[in-house]
Length: 263
Length: 363
Image 1 (cartoon, rainbow over the protein chains, first blue to last red):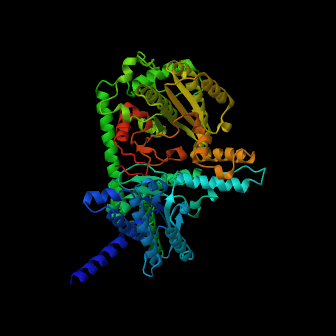
Image 2: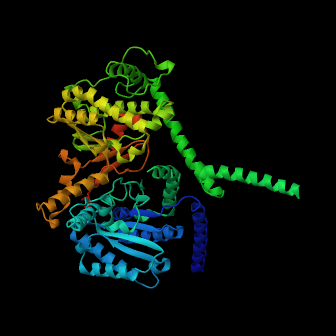
Image 3: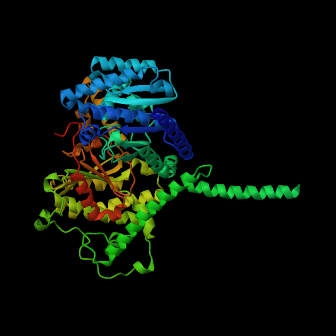
């Protein structure tokens, strides 16, 4: 009985969500959304849970946010999973995070996972050499398995720092131009050597937990993105935050388009 | 038959007018009640905020204005003085009620910082948590001028006044570096008249403020792509940098013709040149090397602790890309000429309450 009621409620939720998204999609929608998933540990402390469960709650929030984004029709979603600075934390914490990541990456390969449901192509961006071998192998396997999907794209930034990405791109462009004496390095040379060049620039960057800083995430690409800083912690983020962010994006979109056309 | 056609035409016209109305409301195709309601709510909310701001401004003007806050009367009387002093190469906007205002305000130039003023931080601010480097995007001059019913060049001149105030405050409160975004590479698309005015305003301000800055021990550096700037401006810039290069109290970095991507690109070119010359190997390129090649190497604190952007825009607009990695961002709703001391104190208080962890754990 309880299961049926729950199913019915879920059907109603899905239907009303579809109506809401139909309304939202009448206006301009962003093509690329970026999330900084901040606040998991604070959430666990607030609820009095044990240390690792904040991140697990964060992961389920991430899955539901991805579902909303793809239902809405947003093609590219980037998430900031793990930064190179986060390696400076306590080894036990880093290890538990790595274990959680390994478990979740492997689950992406399952038949019923969200990857197959929405036809997601997954990229892992970052200095993957800094990860341990198991995680790296799993990541590369997922990238290869989803290489043929083309409907929507998920970019997971693991062991990522924007400054590190720029350094790698600079190195590569120096090597490329080393033999050609006459040409000077242009902006496009650096840009095409960046790992994030597989996606356009983000339209919106959403950071949870109330901090208003970039923390070395997508510095190059967010020059013209709207930055939203939500006070809620990442596991508390829900549909209403996404809708609010998109409505605010739509309000300033026409002005931005005018400016872009001028450029 | 003809009658039916006329009715159809009439209906179409009505539909077009209706669609035009809804399109201007939302820019979409169809009229959707929910979207309309949310748009109304959001614009009402904004209008509400705007009304509150207007109300606050009027209330403040009824009281005796604080000497360091911007007020129109002092600006205008100073403006007349400046026009007389500085000559005719700027646009004049005469309105009858602004000519011949009364006595000039007590100080329209920066007085030397006195020792007594140095120690008085406003309540709530702690001296040990002050940022070393503050960056400011001075946005909203044009919109401010439009709201006041003035011309855009008045907005820019009001902006210079506001900047003067902030520089004074930074010098007094122990902030060591102040970076301001004066002119971006994107701004070159503005009408030529406006660009010429801005650059000549910049040149005039530099010339007239040189003495005051030297007296107050302020060092000026200009960063950005100087290839498109007129020669007279370049000469003034070199002179100002040369004269003030040994000052130590506050370093004012003005970004003209600057964008974050351009900065990283020219650092990359410098490094590529060094690699070609054999000075360094490709494997040795790392973050520290790039940091040294960036144009902000003129200061020993190249990374801002706090970035303030006025006029409510929630973007960084390609200002200081690399250096903003761990900068706290503060977005102010007021336009730049209104920002002044109150807004600056609010930004600093917000900065001091933030927890900066730099990726690690706070324990």
